Image (tube, rainbow, N blue to C red):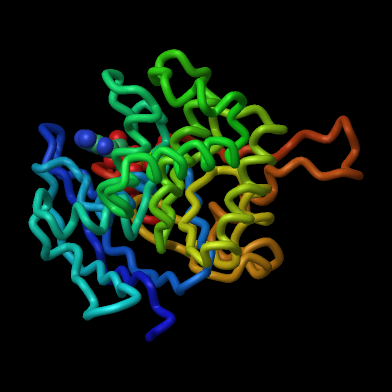
Length: 293
Ligand SMILES: Nc1ncnc2c1ncn2[C@@H]1O[C@H](COP(=O)(O)OP(=O)(O)OP(=O)(O)O)[C@@H](O)[C@H]1O
Ligand SMILES: [Mg+2]
């Protein structure tokens, strides 16, 4: 068995829009190994969500996609995800079962029409066990572990009855319910206050050491990056401009955007009246790519 889990090679996602061709993802390459946590950072609109949606075959249907995404299952031959039918059984078996995703917006993951319990148990029944009772037991146990109060009662509630933080926890429980090999977490803690955020991060780390899963963690928060990941890719305008281990990122940033991002972290000891660095200028839109960056 190889220790490689996911290999992304020259992946592109270009969107033909009325205003022009938007190169949302423009030739990115990286690899994730088993048990490894990789961070993906970059300013708003640089293509982070689009990159992972493309990997999961969830990009808009008019997108022009090129490149290869190879998934290495624990057993059997490697699978080129970009070649699969986006609605076929193979991708559906991978999505949720092998690779689970926590979306930026928790409502994306849940249907408003079914209870939280039904949705989590359904996912477990598709990917793990057909036994209804056992699936429901696994679901309650997971809700408890993500810090949901009264998990039995929550099972019967609909997504809109939960607070933002609770929904985020329920989504994390659903993502982890199938013991995925890879968890893709797209800003999973943005809707949470910092204390709950710290609990959720700890939980993900605990579950990671228990299940041995890999994590691809998308965030703007370099504090989270420092605590969670081993390697980091910095995206800028649809490209990866830096791919390095986390220590080198903080001590030896190469790209001006990374440097500016690090300078903008508040530091203990800095004069309280000193201004924080801000990144000047507006975020460029990939349709009108500046000549130099
Ligand atoms: N469905 C879509 N149709 C057209 N353009 C889109 C679509 N989804 C995203 N885009 C564009 O693709 C580019 C990349 O967006 P993406 O959502 O991947 O950014 P991001 O890095 O995840 O940003 P954020 O940090 O704000 O979540 C942006 O210019 C965005 O406007
Ligand atoms: Mg995003």
